[in-house]
Image (tube, rainbow, N blue to C red; front, side):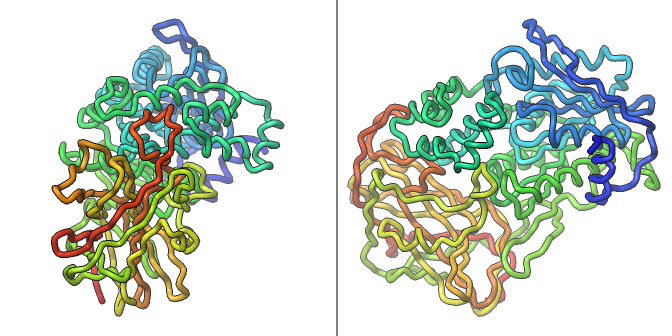
Length: 559
């Protein structure tokens, strides 16, 4: 199917507003853009048939075909110059791909190249999903007033905290991404065979120790950035100072729309960017839906929301039938959220997070979860063995087919998982905002992880994960009191969820969630070279002196 027909059909399917007819789209592929160190970055240009059109830049490591070719056509059909560029070392561009290293300089040099083009109007927009969004944030602060709008989809300015969420290591995300990038370099037929077989090499790599050999198992080659991320994992690592762009977010004056999903791997970091912009007086738009990182619904929503945002803020090019609006004018509804659970639906809010009542749901003996205060009770105990690590089910994962809500009963039946369940709700409870837990733990090992997951137990007894989080404990983090008890604060993924009447809340407490997070070996061996696995007992306390609790932001309670 020709690109232009596909773009026309996609626009109709997405119910995009009609546009003025800019004339035929002219496409020039593989333009060589030379940057400061002589590397050539291959670039495609989709030119509209109108004069003085703004430009939308997309910089990507994933090739310039497929969905991006469609997006280029859609943008040009709406009166934009669409410039799609392959990051260095990918898609035919020269040099070597090193995540986050060159994106600022290459982005600045590309902007200089754009300024020299005869069709440059001085107005720039940027659009990016995942890594493409990292490339946006790397450039945004340097683009100045020429940057008129940003569309940031399931992405963030800082990747370090997502890579080492809770100071553990996001093994599944990082290794799967490394394998996906490498797969772009192998023949198409070989890749299809590997996918059809269920990616056994990747599955074996996720179980492999030491982790420093996992990339070789998954791909047959050593991946430099994977090795570097294993080595430079401490919070004060100098390595990351030039690879995160969070300190540049407040300098961005362009209107920003952020699109994410409740089960996206970057959601907490993206909401940090939102908070930074709000604290600086900006009014970004935030859309969070029932999506995972790669779900089709996210792709559709990002196109619809992103193109509408560019229509709004790239001056003088509002859709046909609409009055032009001033660049920088905020949309009527700053925040739009999908509320999960039965009867949730979509909500429009003035800000994130909304006002809520911080409510403690205490852990009680007998596996009970309740809002009443804790009572004197013995600790609950379980044994975590990294040689048989507690598995992860669903949740925020890179691969959409395995991500999102799943029935957790199989993992809850394991002896290394504690569960605490509420009574059936007499009325609905609606939770919107950040979620956290405070777990009081005593362990025979000084090195351990604390994993906490909130689930919704329906009337049939199925336990659906809502949000979760993991924290790595080591000497110097969460100091123990004289009796050896540590109060471990665990931030969970934020959520918007409606627990229906007759349902129950359930809290899981475990020693890990593998392979989403790298297993904790129970030793002080370095992340990449650890091979010794130490099992150990740990206790979860929930008496008045050690009130372990789940803390929920409740915006409505009919219970």
